[in-house]
Length: 136
Ligand SMILES: Nc1ncnc2c1ncn2[C@@H]1O[C@H](COP(=O)(O)OP(=O)(O)O)[C@@H](O)[C@H]1O
Ligand SMILES: [Mg+2]
Image (tube, rainbow, N blue to C red):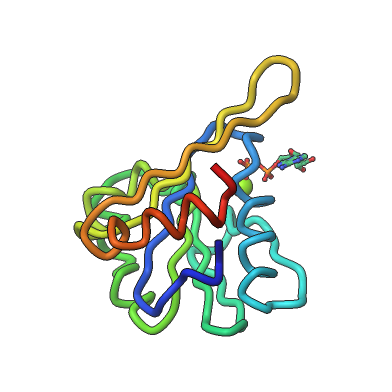
């Protein structure tokens, strides 16, 4: 999936605490060619990882309001790389009209269901490639 990423992309990770957002971000970073550890960005606003392109990893969990989210200037930060945002549903109003939404649902038996929704023209164009990449 990370092969489809182009500079300026935004990926919103949505799911409850423990759903697997950070683990997804780790796999995503490794798909971009980053070989080190990816940690939970809960206590820093944005972390940066260098792969084929730069991944900016952020977590909205501790931010109290939409204006705090907007103040981060995330889209400006991410313009040359890819922005991956945990609790991305809270960032949706400030990330513009093009993004990939990844909803992770963890059921009571420990099974995870991932739903990928391409939003906006640049992602709709890649919808078929995305479906192939994630195998559905
Ligand atoms: N795809 C997965 N397969 C197996 N275990 C997973 C997976 N995703 C997450 N986990 C487990 O769930 C824990 C919490 O995942 P994490 O990514 O930190 O959740 P979140 O960031 O959504 O709060 C991880 O430490 C790991 O043990
Ligand atoms: Mg997390």
